[in-house]
Amino acid sequence: MEAFFPKKIITMNFQYVIIFLVSFGFCFLVSCAEFPYFNQSLKDDGSLSFLVIGDWGRKGLYNQSELAFQMGEIGEKLEIDFVISSGDNFYEDGLNGVNDPAFQHSFTNIYKAPSLQKTWYNVLGNHDYRGDVEAQLSPILREKDKRWFCLRSYVLHAEIVDFFFIDTTPFVDDYFTNPKEHTYDWRGVLPKDKYLNDLLKDLDLALSKSTAKWKMVIGHHTIKSAGHHGIITELAQQLVPILEEHDVDFYINGHDHCLQRIGSIDSKLEFLTSGGGSKAWRGDVKGWNPVELKFYYDGQGFFSIELNQKEVEFVYYDVFGNVLHKFSVSKDSCVSSQ
Image (tube, rainbow, N blue to C red; front, side):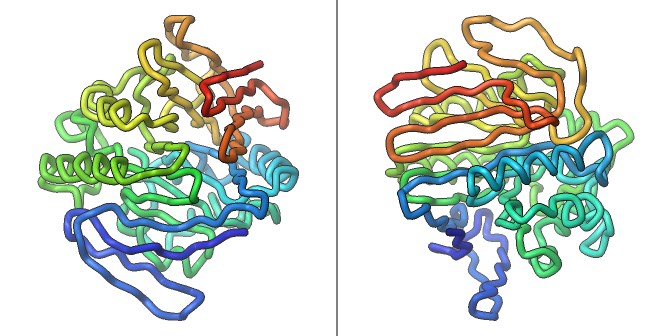
């Protein structure tokens, strides 16, 4: 029940987005000043199911291949509609161009299960910015593997839920002021202040227009985390007020190589990390308020999401497919977990 089809195609910062509409066999360009919108069909029963994986692209190493196998098994069981990637798609330094064999070695040749042959909705991570960013955004990659879909920021609309994918790497000042030995590809981002102001304005506008029952925002970087990177101050200060103002239900991220769930004491917003797609950081965990920290796992894994009009269920899995944690949230504010 997959539909890859623009509801409208518009871009922020007056940059061009090129989308190959395979069904019609032509290339469509529009330039405008909001997030691009895309539609995703629901199942016949009005539900959706999908997987979330982050920090994965290591040519099968660090149990990436083993995890891909378990994703395929769970994907088949749940009859998933798509996959979400929370960024850092290719290590260590992104892709070096559209013909980089790492695309096949870390993506196409790894996620081979029949259930994973659905659209992968990606965001960019900081490691992706260390390579040729334009390569990951290029429609040429979609020609190589029709599952691949990546823009800097965009909205996926599925009737009962809206997903807001946002580009978080340019928020982190340290990448600009203290890049160390790394080189970042800032094409399309500079001047940074204008880029971020436009992004925040466009996110605020998109959220204000949303009438979906559920709202999920996906970005690579952590906002709240008991892991290595902890709180990203720039996002906590600039992004969280917008999320809370518009009653966003979940912020989903990668960046910390773990699985976790952190709630909020003063709002319904939950912060969910899926960054265990390959190399994990065992034992790299900080103290956190136990009232907020609902779950933390310092190993490899991913989680699934099943949702309908009334309820959403999350299940976290390890590299062996074992269930580590699960919880559900209903729109009448009843929460159950185990």
